[in-house]
Each structure stands twice: as structure tokens, then as C-alpha cells.
Length: 263
Image 1: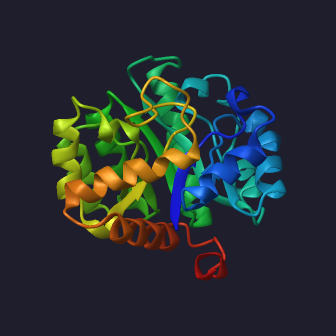
Image 2: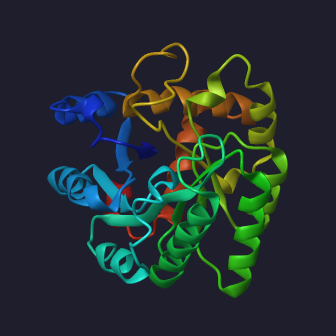
């Protein structure tokens, strides 16, 4: 079984297609997926999808693009929402200096609030980081010094230094379809050096479809192709990579019932 550790099934791109998406994923041996929260105000929609489908779990959080609009969301609210059995992570949250949709100081404050929620719940923090490597690494180091929390760098496309500093803190690193792009040689070099026990794969669907679907709508079934490319990078078989990334997912997202992985 392969796990799509990060997708957005609540987005309008997938309206009315959830059952078909899950069926196509199952045909590609993708047996589990996590639909990710990006706005706490829309959390009910995310949770409803997870509740309706045994193959789907979810997270709760505020994307950095939405940080200014959700600066009022407190740690207690995140912790309370995360108590639902289907909520297995916090986020996605983090820093995005490429678009700067929210002021950077607000992004930082909201991100640290999510870190606190991850620390209090013990749930992994799904981190969005774009063009913010230095600040991201510094915040993670500062906050880890206050108390450990599970870390997942989602859709990794940053530099080697952030990977190394985060992995030193115990972070997991997830790769998306970007890994398959022709000009992603540097990213593949970084992926080669990520410890095998810290690797995950994802789609970030509906975005970032891997080759040969680049430019088209992405969906959970396509994570199998990213896992295949990651296997090539690491010099293992696709079956071995599927086993490795699923085992890593099970360790990181420990709230998912163990019997899910035994079936």
C-alpha cells in the first residue's frame, strides 16, 4: 500500500468526484490519503470528507496565505478540533515568502501557534515552507528547544540546508510530483540523502501532477508514480519504497489505527 500523505480533496477541483478519486487511487495501490486543512473556517468541509470515507484522514490548520485572515484562531481551538478521531495532524501551516499573501510577522506568529498545538497534541505538524529556508530552520530550532514536536516538511522543494537542519531535529520529509520534473536534478540529489526512515510521498493534489501528467489536474492515484521515481533515486524497488514510506507514515501519524496498515 502507498499513502498519499497530503492532498486537498475539499477543493472545488474535485467537487462530486470523491468516490471516483478514491476508486482510482485504490486501483493504483494508494490505500490511504490525508486531506489537508488550509483554513480553520472551512474545517467542517475537510472533516466531512474524512468522516465519509474510511480511506481518508485529515488535518486542521491555517495555511500561511490565510494567516492574516485567521490570526484570531487560538491554540485551544486547534487542540479542540484536533481531538476528533479522524484528525491526525496539525496544519498545513508555515511560511511563504514567495507570495507573501500575509505579512511575515503574522505568518510567523500563526505558525508558532500551530507548533504549540502540535506540541500539546503530539500530532505531526504539516509544514509549508517556500522561499523561507533560513527563517523556517531558525524557528524550528528555537521551538524544538522549548519542547519537541513531530515535524513534517511537506512538498519539499527547498534547499539542502533546511533539509539537513530539519532532519537533525527529527523531521520527516515528503516529496511531491516536483521530484519527477526534468529540471529537478538538485531536488533529486537532496532526496537521495534524506534518511530512508524519514521519507514520505504525497501529491498536493490538485496541484503539481508528476510526469507524465504535469500541467494537468493531480489526484491521489498519481502518488504511485512519484514513489516510483523516489525509489529510482534511492536505488530500491518501487515495492520497497512503498513499504518504506508507508511504514514511515504509520510511525509519524501514530493516531491512525494500526489495523489500517494490517489490512
